[in-house]
Image (cartoon, rainbow, N blue to C red):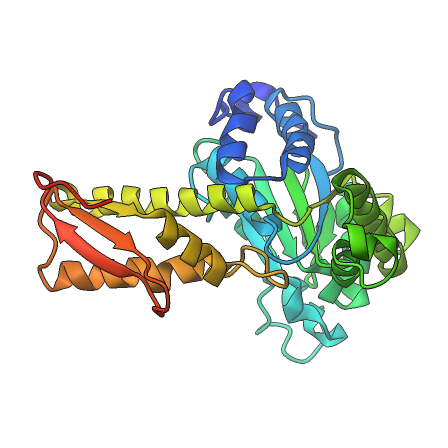
Length: 349
């Protein structure tokens, strides 16, 4: 039985009108997916979510590095204040049938029953919430890698919001929003983006028709992988498209801004500014973005070529408080070049 809204529903972390704006600031270039998620969060915050099933079930499709996992983290950050406030299940750990026992625990009578602690319990689900909201955000990452028995277990979760563990206790997902991510169809999408034969190979693919084709490829892959009863339990299937150049530039700008905020928060009065030339930004994009991995390597590239060198300069006492670190790129170099100045000195363009 549901409790009253006065005890069950906490004050939303954000005004509902601001949720889409908050997500859009964190996830760039995938507006349709974000617009599909927000109404389900609003439904829960209003106390009108359906009974006896999860608040919403989403399947996020698309190539690596297009923002699928980042979307779930951004939602956790917007709702709870931290991207860590989610329960993440890496389905790559459950590729074999016997490994699924790690998730729900071995049933009584099986060897090692008492020593097997389920990875997914009601306590862990509740621990992913916060004082700001009691909505649980659950992520089953790379669902296509899971053993068939895990998909069968999920049928009950997606339909009735109940998972029965090996010790016969249950986990209730009625106050949960569930995300499944998958790279299904990624290779087919890559072929559609860069056709090797025919007229489109010579003229290029029109963006409008490309999105339709990519969605069709993704859905065909889903229908081959999952049973109709599994697909019918999913509320929204969103296809994430490869990121355009302007979108990648925004993602890089966000990462640089995050680094600047981190400097201010950690160093306080010893903080300094970081500025990058246009060539430096182009270098980071070229190093951190690829057709195969999308923007997944960009964060690691920024850390290697920007954050680590700047940290070394700070450790050696080369950066003054309130000063400026300027990063540039010279043709032929294997990394960025840095110069530090005081705030009173103008920087060369």
